[in-house]
Length: 348
Image (tube, rainbow, N blue to C red; front, side, top):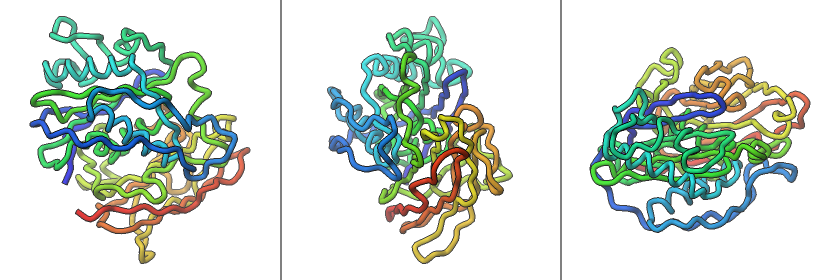
């Protein structure tokens, strides 16, 4: 079973940063995974600006290449648009991974920050480091993950996706990405920098009218059905999820052409059932642009991710098949093309 150590999320102007901290013994690098092949995504039409093809990544080692391919395969299936490799973001991500490897996670108030004068210092914040590496960003986000000692693999990307705020960040409107990995005792740690350029970047990665971003996406299989709620900070409101564990979060992004044009989102149903049709208790979290009778306004989505919602089952999901149903409207927009989809949880 995989687990993450404590995760931290930090919001900043025009960008969101999320990270996980800690150090672990190294794991062998997995074999390379094939690059994703563009295919229709849930609810995708023809008038969006999603990146449906990007140049093949050029990495010298399997960990970086696997992380890139894995994240893009998820984004492709989810309808979020592919990320292009950025050598500048590779530099900023790897520089910080090297800094954390050398100095640990507690040299500043956030694991994202660096203290000048310490070995490997490359910039006080992720945004400074991206700028120093030559990337002129208009939108930027950084996630840092570390796999806990109970993990059986080095799947840092997969573990980060099995959260709320980190997963939303990884499915956001970024166009470019860079990867960094720790070494030695920090070999299980990954730093992922994602951004869009200042000029023209915000016009990209917009799903078409009526489309959504959905993860786990239709036909996807996730490795396990447990979300370690207390390992992510800020923590989902304890009044909503009182236990330390819950089920795999279902992430829904509604920032399509209709929303970008000024539409507001109203959810009338977002629910989860088992293969036998049994309804599962869950809570719905929504950003500032999402409302509905059962939607709980979430300050950690808030204005940083105003058009995202998350359905979080109260209890961990057992191995099996699950169906999500979404009924929502966007003022001034057409009906959503995807209203129901099914995903699987793998057997342990």
